[in-house]
Image (cartoon, rainbow, N blue to C red; front, top):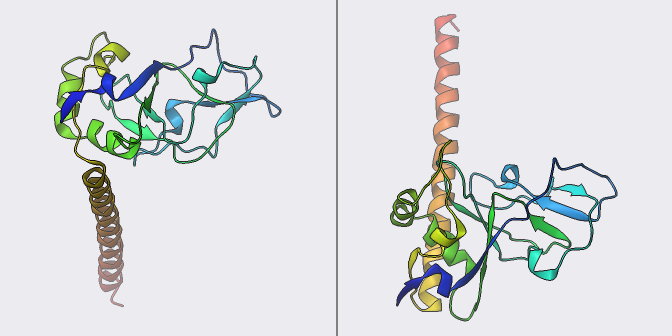
Amino acid sequence: MKTMLKNLADIQTGYSFRGRLEYSDSGNVRVIQMKDLTSDNIVDCHELIKIDMEVLKDHHLAKKGDLVFRSRGINCTASILLEEIENTVVSAPLLKIRAIDRNKVFPEYLKWFINQPESQKFLQSRLSGTHGGMIRASELAELPVSVPDLKTQMLIVEISELSEKEHRILSEIAELKKDYISKLLINSSKGE
């Protein structure tokens, strides 16, 4: 089945703060910003800043399984929130994507699909503005999404994660090998 993202998920613009975020140790709300999205497309909640602000409406709050989309710049990808967090908002210009029905589509699958080259090509064609461009929520909503059955979605996600893990391990091995050879050659140049 193929449909548009807007039929599978609610897409909401991140909370727009009126000024600079003022950190507070005793803050009652945590904020997800661009810096909290890792290169492997996970939301890192360990260093979220805390701020003091009025209690927000429930629809502003982020939840486990939400996707956080980088709407600006060259790299317009989605990251996933893997942990349950309380009183946390996604800040603008990020977008929050929440699967409407997890019996129809897994958030992990949506993350994978959005980050695929075909989807990225679609999104890049919709960039507007200056300084790397921006994807509006209405344009992201039009992304065509292929939706296989849940079992197939989970297999795709698992295979993708294993492939990424293999890539990281091979990169680490290559770096260790490079360091080892470099040390051998340095020692050889010293006659050791």
